[in-house]
Length: 295
Image 1 (cartoon, rainbow, N blue to C red):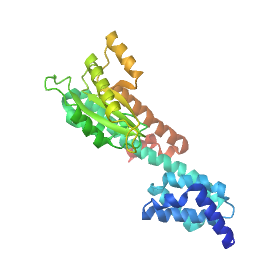
Image 2 (spheres, rainbow, N blue to C red; image 1 turned 90 degrees about the vertical axis):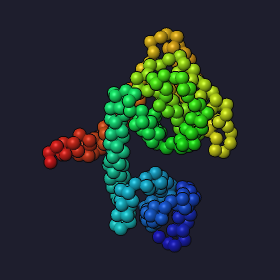
Image 3 (cartoon, helix red, strand yellow; image 1 turned 180 degrees about the vertical axis):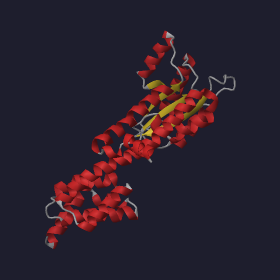
């Protein structure tokens, strides 16, 4: 490829993908890998600028994975081609699934730990609290990135100190503020042996109303919206409490039990293993357990 044509192709791809701006935000190691990948695309005359965009999007999405970095370096050594790219996509589907399974394995351990603590009831409060502080995905499995947790949780705890007159069973384990995508989620965690009461619903409603009035705003760093979630051991059979629970749900203030959260997490992360079993059965959780037992 002529030097001028190569420069023109490079400029066009960089403009189409905003590559250089993204490149500057990466670590030295990631920049090296990204340049290897980018240069390989530029040097291949069979890859048109428009075709490069999905390839570079894959690079941006997966650059932090060590396995992906190793794969790119291997391609850089061998030289890139259409055939090599097809192999990259096929190999990476397996690698990506394996990476997700590793994450899934770790999360299943947390789920099992929480399940055990819930079974024991309120005696393990000091252990339940840090699980929710450190693992926001338990509240919502789609939350891969939670920000502002320390800041908003501290604000809520200071603003809403519990009365010393409350019985031990009625006390909360914690109140947390998870910020996800511009929304602040106010999460109050009651003890696993707690049955939902009218007072509990009033309380979470008061928290959310205060946040919507005093925290939600239009500033650059302000959350744009607020929701509420109350986590309890059991739901009430009282129809008036059920009616209030339904009414609050219409205001994005919901109630879930510990069992609800555990069931959802188990279902979501079970799907990861199903996906890997279809792509590469030899790496599934079932096969890995069989190999471990055979040793």
